[in-house]
Length: 197
Image 1 (tube, one colour):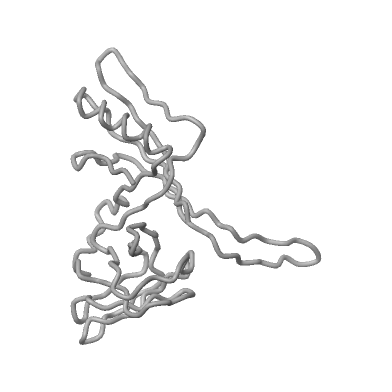
Image 2 (cartoon, one colour):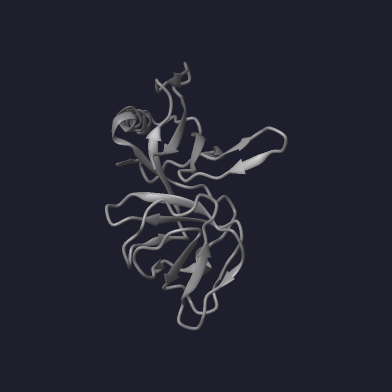
């Protein structure tokens, strides 16, 4: 799984939920929920005027078509750092729309709309949007609301939950990867990542 260089960050992003459910229409509409919903995000990078940096980014995006790419989800001005960096899954084999965790600071609030990623024991990240305000108990435990996509796999006890710097990981979408070159030596790059699971 490839990552962009540390000094490269998007200056624009368009996230989307890829909904695997649907609506059956007839006499009345019936919503059918299916497992497998996930996220994709279209990102634009600021014009890259550093020839070496642009060359590396283009090279990694070309290879990411086959190997995949992991990037930080852009939180913009939302500060989720009060949740701490020691959050882990609390108990193996969980399923459904609630994820029990431990390692939060006592009394920390995980707000509705916060983004998080769960890193599996194999290192793959699964992005989620938190569904409501939850307060950690005195021992740092909480039940996070991940009904946006439901849990897409049963995680091992103790795997990391990233709230401060959530990641989206997946494949570069589309049949081609292109970039713009201009006479002022700026390289314009746009790409879309879609979660593979």
